[in-house]
Length: 146
View 1 (cartoon, helix red, strand yellow):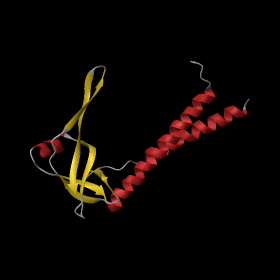
View 2: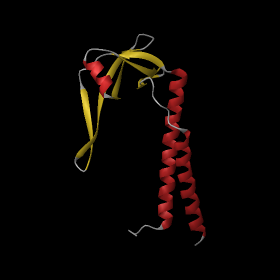
View 3: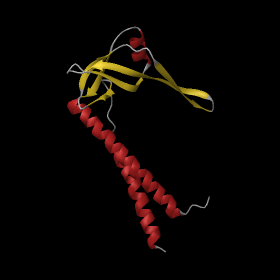
View 4: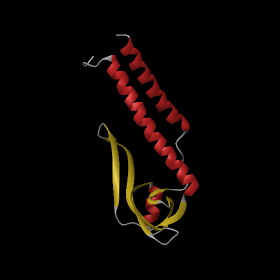
């Protein structure tokens, strides 16, 4: 099948699982940091907005918006978070001259989220790690059968 051995497929699954696990752990670390240290601020209205349209078979399936959001930290520092994804309600508020509440990390103020974000479930990290374990175990087993 396309010149791929079962062992290579298992190694690829293990690599995907390992990379996914690392990314998921990083996301969970960020989730925890926002829970423990996140500070609220108000983003200023924006001028430039980038529309991102996702398509499938040349038909639009999803439209989202990215903007650079500027806000002041508790210490009075002006910070701009680049390419923050906005929903239509937040975009409309900003375009009308309103301000939108966000949460930032004091040690990395350009890393922002909006209040009400949902943390990644632990089950996704566990699932990815399971893919790694199955792929690595199957590859090891197949290499020992030779």
